[in-house]
Length: 243
Ligand SMILES: Nc1ncnc2c1ncn2[C@@H]1O[C@H](COP(=O)(O)OP(=O)(O)OP(=O)(O)O)[C@@H](O)[C@H]1O
Ligand SMILES: [Mg+2]
Image 1 (cartoon, rainbow, N blue to C red):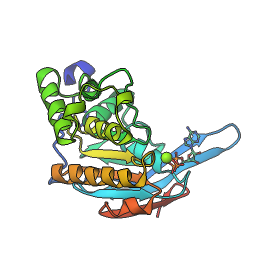
Image 2 (image 1 turned 90 degrees about the horizontal axis):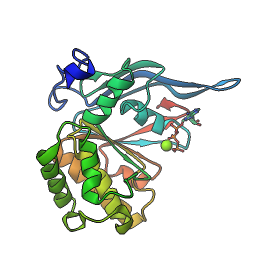
Image 3 (image 1 turned 30 degrees about the vertical axis):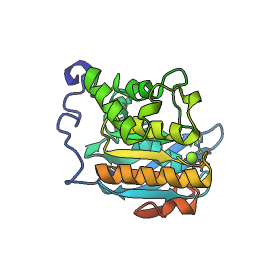
């Protein structure tokens, strides 16, 4: 794979799991500026954050404070305008689109508020679709998907389409999908805001158990103070700054 994408020597080949030797995420003076017609928006204003390899951090702040921007940069969806970003020991600060695709496939998992399951694929196929692109394919991928569905209590719903699942079940499929590639860091952007309180708390408990039992780091974006109790600590944001 390295040879074909011309990515050899980009830091991936030497990449070792973050667990045990370094933080899952280091951001130093990460900045994101959007140029607008006659001004500019500073979405992320020299943000510093470190998330340890097995840590679960709640990211809290008002709407527009830069939480999604921070997660998008940590997950290789967006490039920072300036600053340093290291994910699982790989410095992605200056990565181009091709290298960032690999970051998304191999180093991070995402769970968004809107869940984003593919509507015409079953629960099991929604897990497998990640792996078509990722590290594991074929029979090992199917075994992994079945194992995750089992652990998430979805074995008997593997063949259901997203439209045939409850909100909490869809959220669990999304969590399973984010875990398919054994990421170093999972980014949860308001994972419970579409759920009622009881289900939201149950999903958070599940997220916490899954992350802790696997020793995976996580950032959980939330407006809800009740969610923060499931995390190791809270980090607050305001106007693009990490406080
Ligand atoms: N593509 C873009 N172009 C211009 N400005 C943007 C863009 N994306 C985000 N912004 C601005 O950057 C700031 C941070 O946005 P961001 O989505 O990170 O906030 P947030 O903390 O996730 O908010 P919310 O809680 O509402 O989801 C906001 O002021 C937003 O308007
Ligand atoms: Mg947001």
